[in-house]
Image 1: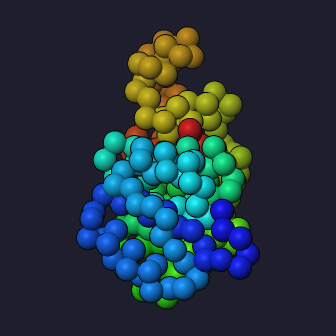
Image 2 (image 1 turned 180 degrees about the vertical axis):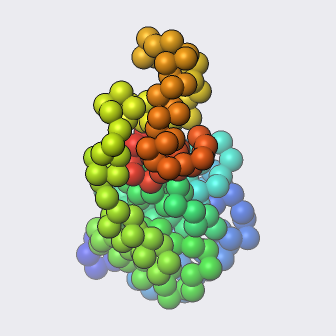
Length: 217
């Protein structure tokens, strides 16, 4: 960790060498930041972050082997000293909230300008949360939505349990096995869930469930 008078120490993890070179150049020209290491994948990012304890780990989400979400989860589980900033091309809701659940303090898109990136690194390094403009509005909208208990008030406890398993991608046969129900009973419950949520298929039900926080991170 850097002391209060020194520059923030930054780890950059991305599988594109050109992007890493650009990030290093940005950090090298900013006196308040310094790049202490680069990683070309999630596994290396975890190893370097736990060994070097940088102030901020800047991670891409789409990396070979261990992805950015799993790397963020491992890093934040190992130490709270390293703040994680996601810098990625992915702007879908699932990626944003998966990163947040994994412990990331910030989420920026790669189209962000140099000043915005520098500001985000400083914010995460100081313990604050920071999101790109479009991402921030999405996060606010997410937390303004009804909680699962309200959104799924019409569901029975069993239906809510099955919906949670649907959110995790389990097929009916697996749900039946886990809950010791017959496949026909599960099919009936799933049909009832679709009707109560006013959705046409499994994919829509899964999306509603994931948005409401059901299922495993």
